[in-house]
Image 1 (cartoon, rainbow, N blue to C red):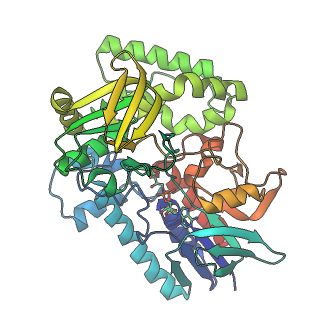
Image 2: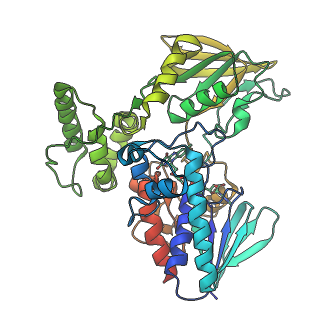
Image 3: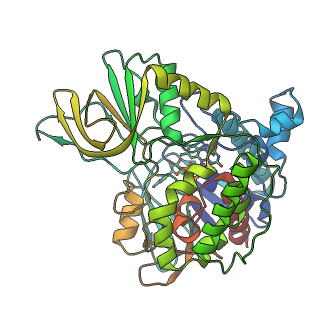
Length: 455
Ligand SMILES: Cc1cc2nc3c(=O)[nH]c(=O)nc-3n(C[C@H](O)[C@H](O)[C@H](O)COP(=O)(O)OP(=O)(O)OC[C@H]3O[C@@H](n4cnc5c(N)ncnc54)[C@H](O)[C@@H]3O)c2cc1C
């Protein structure tokens, strides 16, 4: 009997399983592996705080491409939210609510699987290795048990941020450095802490500041990143349109895109309207644009425009921006600059900065909010490390993800050969597609991959 293994039960893995179940006509076994018992939720939709919000309006968060109002309708029916429909569609719902939505989808898929005679096995364990044999794929779990499958999906998703170098006397155990900003440990037990440094000024920094406040942290918070803080509030400004795309997105050059954005920015400034629509309108074409760029253009985009693109496309609800702005006056200092070095001694981090704002900070806690690591050389995931060392996977030239045939989702090994039975989707495709981490992109991939696997 066909046996499909899905490694990772975040949105990517779970939605692939949902479509696989939906499309399957024959009996088979689907085994799903995750280190945590948070089915479908992954890191993004199992937040430690109820105040952590989605960064995308509800109207764009349906899990199904073919049913764009699926999430909004679920909110209306299951959560019985009584507000104007337009207001609901534009609202930024709590991430834990989205986790409940995904759990609901999974429960329905399990019923379908039962009716179709599909066996579903859920393993709450890390997969640490994968080996190809003549007839199957062997997955080794953390307890060394081995599960044999015929096809396998790497839905390993977001990784911990790249670790940070801290100098210390080798015998001293560092306490107070948190590599995982999505874990509640990073914001609790702060009674004896008077100062925290958050590395990174993006959306995770905001969640972390809100988390610290919620846990009644009373000290000083510093945040640092090379560009400072530039998150923009959402103005629901999607009603405007870019006049005309004067290029074919399959053959566009970086210069054409930059000219278009610059031109629209001028128009928006003149009309005094939010620039939100510009990024919103270009977003559906970003994968095509990325694919059409030469290596040189990709390198230029990453060195010059990546930061601008990321800050332009991420929006926050006005009330969240207001909360952050209020804290800036009292206990939050946002620093524009770089960290030169960090020394740890007796529970204190001595941080040297290259910044006009500050040159030295002494803090008792550091929280790494630099975002999910993509470079396999830095990723701390035994499975991915073993796959890389065994040359079953390799990275794209910018080390953003795993080389993959994006039409079939099949992995390409380090000899350039397509592996017929190993697939991937979601954040691991960043090198191939650039924009591939949000629900809008992954739901398309999960639907296609579910169909491929069912046949
Ligand atoms: C904090 C945060 C907030 C976000 N908010 C939004 C949002 O509002 N809207 C939006 O569209 N997108 C958002 N995103 C983007 C998010 O990446 C996607 O929406 C989506 O959740 C990614 O799902 P995934 O399954 O690919 O990855 P993940 O959610 O990271 O799931 C991967 C799973 O694989 C498991 N895993 C990894 N390796 C192994 C292994 N070797 N063995 C077993 N299990 C393994 C992990 O434990 C994890 O549960 C957010 C991302 C983050 C990090």
